[in-house]
Length: 300
Image (cartoon, rainbow, N blue to C red; front, side, top):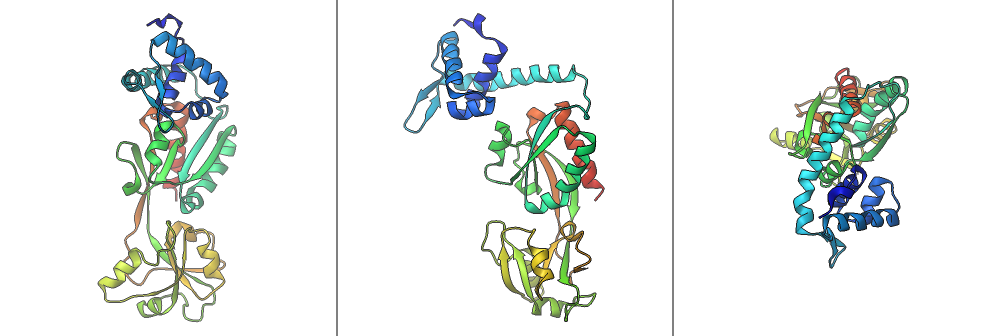
């Protein structure tokens, strides 16, 4: 093994290769061409005396030596990043960064608008990339750096990730202004008699927590429309005699077209948390962005 030719750039390359287990994805992560990354891989193989990645039936797999290197190398480089970051002056107004946030369309409506407007004034060179929350892939996305910050409920937050409570949400009933059966109040009988719009994130579902609560009191409702996203619900309700139970923050801004009412029975609310990988915990820019988002969320 000849490690005298291993500079920091090569070690960062090795970290990406070991994390991705794929030359193409590692090249994309490092913003390198595939030939350039292949040349670096050749240098790493020569310096370490190990092939590191070898062809398999599907793609490539890590050698045993590569597996052994992955975690200690990542920890060592995170230590270097932390030392460098802590030694640099931090000014939000001049920092350049791209923050990738994963969440639902409801969370986008509830938080992203105010967050993005605040950043235009306080951190104008920060870009936000919003992507749909993929609960099953979230842990891997955070680990690989494909997502910097996720917004989720605690039960959808990967156990190994850091999290912070942002706010607690409750549900309200929405009905259009001028609804013939709803005039500032909705009784349980009216609630059950009217047609409902529900949100089923996976698509196709016609029941949820509301139906479980109704079943406890021996009642049921009629669901006429199931949609995979929240944002269309206020528009549909404002144009029809259907009603819906939605998170309170989703109803904000619709008072000119919708009645926002208390449900006629108790429907459990939910908590929203921010979720991130430990590798970004001490990064000044990431930490400042998380704190700013948390402050805006707490302000309602």
